[in-house]
Image (cartoon, rainbow, N blue to C red; front, top):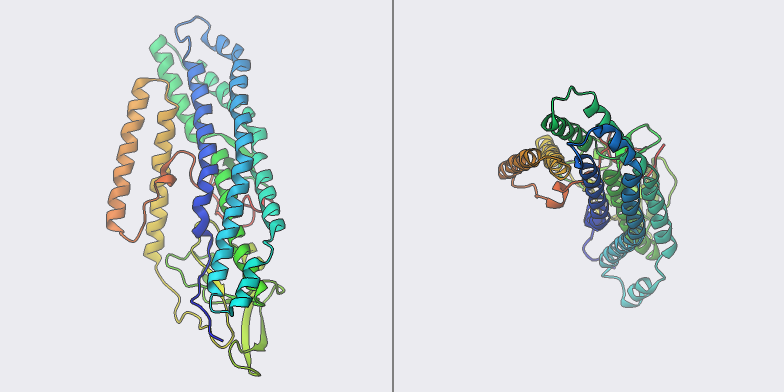
Amino acid sequence: MSWGWAVPIHPGMVEDLSTGVRDLYADAEQRLLGIVARQLADGYDAPGWATAKLRDVQALRRGAQGVVDALGSAVRLDVFDAVAEAYNVGARAGLAELGALHDDDLRRIAESTPNTRAVDRLAAETIELVTQTHRGILRGVEDGYRQVIAEVSATPLLGVDTRRQATQRAMEQFSDRGLRTFVDRSGRAWQMTSYAEMATRTATGRAAVEGHGDRLRAAGLDLVIVSNAPHECPLCKPFEGRVLSLDGPDGSRTVEVEHATVDDELVRVDILGSVDEARRRGFQHPNCRHSLSAYLPGVTRAPVEHSEDPNGYKASQRQRAIERGIRKWKNRAASAVTPEGKRAAETRVRQWQAKQREHLRQHPELIRRREREQPGAGNLPPNGGTAGRPGTPTDPR
């Protein structure tokens, strides 16, 4: 039997499907910061400004509640659509990989009932992970609002202009902190948009891999091989070129299996462990480019060499840092309470964008992802941490 060309699947192939959810949260975060800024800017010249602002908390809460309610209604449908489409992408990749099967077998596999339970489960888990941050949004908005008032009130004020400048500085700090509305079981505080994007990207990646794996299972295949990827991180490097089992037990082992194309011939295969085990160890974390493809005993050959590109990995990490800089100053522009503050922030945005263009000129192998330069993008908690390790949104502990 001959086989088609391998069509490997990795989470990055479907990461764009999380953009819609990310945009919902980024828009909500900017709207919430804008509500706070407008409420603070109103009545600068009135006597008893701080007292008046504290009396306005109920109005602030009502405005924020409207944003949160609209967000909750929209996100459920978007998450389900993203997970379902990711599963279909993976399933189509699996069918393409099996393209040289007999037509009857291929038709049977293609017409097999999609694993809707897996899609429903992943979507439900992700919606729960994402929407649990909503419980902290109103508290985060109110706490940030009160903190800005307290910081401004503690500043010796000489007049309206001084109060406006102090409010601008306090809002800049609030904007930089972001709305940290969720703390995971590892104690890391996440901004609402970063957490939502991380959870959705992780779920779509898992759905794609599951869709791919389900098609291979339907063809009687259980073994997959990990690709060799450029810019690999230390977390995934141990898996490059290794064989994993879709459904087998955890732990490394050596087995004898039938040759994929030669009858009555056995082949020894070293299996590193299961796919689920590898994921628990951080494999295929967000931004990972390592793919899985069918492993055919006696036919598939592992990569001869591991890729070594430490400079490329450093360059990609520098790109992520520049993206964070662009996002920071865009958020500051959105939450500015003075024209001067807005102009200054917009100038810094252009400076960071120039840094990005220069960095990409020096590293043409990198691709500019403009959506990752928008406020709220990113997949790390504000106080650091490593995406994809146990304790991230897919496994908060």
